[in-house]
Length: 367
Image (cartoon, rainbow, N blue to C red; front, side):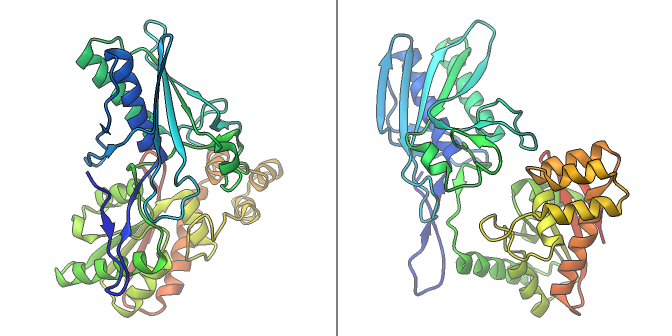
């Protein structure tokens, strides 16, 4: 499956989508485990992504040793200015202890989690949940096909990954030693403000032309699925807003519909609550002092307020306040609605906000 282009305007060439580090790691694991089971590396190697796409990846390295096999893939991020574009993503597989299932190790250039607040426990390799799930599914399928046990140690490494990580937020997040293996869909969408906002506008136009009166913009696939279920919305009503909440709301101000829902995770909605209209991590940050002030307003104790102020991630703040019985997510939803309403101004639109956790559960709703 080729990397498909993303249309921009008529005077510019299309932007190419690319593949996430998680997709590359999954493909490399598939190639390496196939070689361990059969003695042959498939090249190219194909995988199935979470939404059904079936890309093929060319192998950059093939190596075998005493009870191990290794495969590597050069990451192609398409036209996205991704710091890991061109990085070599390597999977080394070794048979594990009977009954151990799939275990993960961080090889050179892949980080290790050292602080709470992330989807992985401290001490775990920074291989995120969706890539882990993809890798496990590949291992289990190959084990069934070739009669393997499926007990496998998977080590992911990225040469120069530690240097690349210095250009990301990993050091601030307490991920040490390298990059994270990321991705929820397997696909990298090229980061182009004008192209993406243009696509948002066209999505709104098409939905309005179809007679839809309730639209929803979400920051990602998890929040999109949650808001679709929450309001029983058709696919056409879902606007691929991403981080560009301002671009969506400003266009709706001039081209209103009856109702709009904005949905996103706690961190993204916190940024909106703080008045940020571009939610990308490179251009807006969660203000932990602001969150500490909101925690104090909820009558959180001085110790809790201090922990919030010094927290590592927004997820950690949510966990800390929730454990203390404070519904900070509800405050975020309310403040985010206030900020979004300010952007819509007096447009005749009914607005609501949904805050969604990592499992896809709506944890707060306002409006």
